[in-house]
Amino acid sequence: CFWRRFQVSAALKEGHVTPTELCQRCLALIRSTRFLNAYITIAEESALKQAEASEERYKRGQPLGVLDGIPVAVKDNFNTAGIETTCASNMLRGYISPYNATVVQKLLDQGAVLLGKTNLDEFAMGSGSTDGVFGPVRNPWSYSRQYKEKSVPKSHSEDKESNWVITGGSSGGSAAAVSSFTCFAALGSDTGGSTRNPAAHCGVVGLKPTYGLISRHGLIPLVNSMDVPGILTRCVDDAAVVLGSLAGHDPKDSTTIQDNFKPFELPNLTDVSKLSIGIPKEYHAPGLSSEILALWSKAADLFQNAGAKVVEVSLPHTRYSIVCYHVLCTAEVASNMARFDGLEYGHRSDMNESTESMYAATRREGFNDVVRGRILSGNYFLLKQNYEKYFIKAQKVRRLIADDFMRVFRSGVDVLLTPTTLSDAAPYVEFIKEDNRTRSAQDDILTQAANMAGLPAINVPTALSERGLPVGLQFIGRSFQEQQLLTVAKWFEKQVQFPMIQLEEVERHNHGVFQDQKSTSFS
Amino acid sequence: QKVSVEVLDHLEHLALVDFRDSEGVERLQKAIQFADQLHEVNTEGVEPMDSVLEDRWCLYLREDDVTEGNCTKELLENAREKVEEYFVAPPGNIPLPKLEERETFLQGS
Image 1: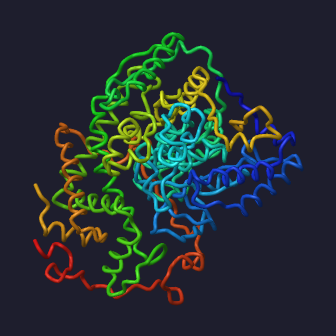
Image 2: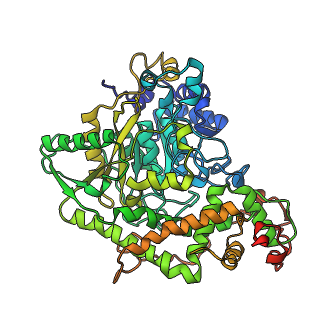
Image 3: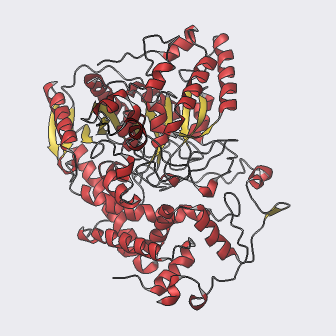
């Protein structure tokens, strides 16, 4: 089935729809889809003000750019001035950021309308968006006609409540927000796959940019050496547009490269004969569903039949990436979470006997088990007697993982094609049977290595599974070669024609301006 | 190998997350067991990698000029306990209760 891309930006420019109408429509849809629990905070007042300002600019014929008036959502681990930023944790409940993260500021400077902050796993630790204090996020596809048709009904009322599937994580709220049409783009973060994983489960495009391309200033850090802001949109072109507005050196983030970044438009690739696609055999990981394996194979054939060179490659240290991540992540988390002591911001315990007992009580009260567990483990690996054995060792393994990729790219491969997840989205009741660490270890296996090596990677929604749920495939590119990566991704997207979600609430809100055309993208 | 009570005690002083109950210890044990897989990898002659950008730049320093500040009011807004322009902390240099005095399960071991 084919979907048409309706140019919302053009619609705004030509006055077919106004920014305030668009904003109100999205806010109304957010209200109708509350049950998804995708949003933690809805910034209705400020959003409408931003929309009004945008409308003025359009009236004067002076829009700031393609993003002017476009409703966006931001994961709740990005600082947003005047708006509560919680990281889905009791530790930051009530914390009103005094500043905007650089990426948020950039979006606002382009005229984007910030609808609200989206839900996540607490402090972005998790792969389900189920472990935040505001509850789990529900995958919009759980309520789609496509999923409902395929599920075996036990009883009508029981179905809606017990059958829903997870969004994946940790940027599940952002993915659900984009997937359910409540915004046109959302920011997520990606440390081990946290943007690509929920993108795959929610049927949206999830881009992890090269480490160092986009500023992390204002993104509450998890792992400083791996975190990147992630971009979630409904099509690859939109991701390119958002990337264009966010990338570039930030003097406030010394880990951003100094090179000048030039925003690009994606060509409509027709000839893939000069392309070399690598298929890493180690990504045929244990637990990979036969469905996804088949899709991956089909995709490889697609490229081959179109004339591209498709080669099997090897990344031998892939299976150690998760263990390596486990050590480096917990170590950096132990360090990054040290700032939460109740003194300057965030939750503070009433315990007042001593600094240390106040810190311990504050952190016990403010952090969930997952966070506390990681801090404890991280401190263990950083103990003097363990430092060489675990932390340094992990850093060495990291180099081996990064070198694996370098070797493959140097051999002439342009882009790697892999699955993004092991299977389609699990039902919540199944997912919670295993603990967070086990789940993360299982689910991050295909996405994590790209963070280890700092490489750009993107999930492109590919097809629906037998259960009627989205399955995506991942492309991994060379450092700072987002243009090439996205060009290939866009070509693939066009070939697969991923179906649009058939969601009652979306259809109800979609009459009027858009009539029978569903506006899926803004560019 | 199991984590000794002394190490656990030491860890708590460093981590300050009050996770010394049996669940916390169990988690830690599992985490260590998981991490031990790293030792299967031969890393002889391999340099540890601090940053994926190591080839691209040297961490630069900027001029020591004040470019922003004067935001005392905003910064104090988020603190719960404050006096004038100070954050207020409980008395320091008081160590956490000794092993024998603690009410945790560790007392029993």
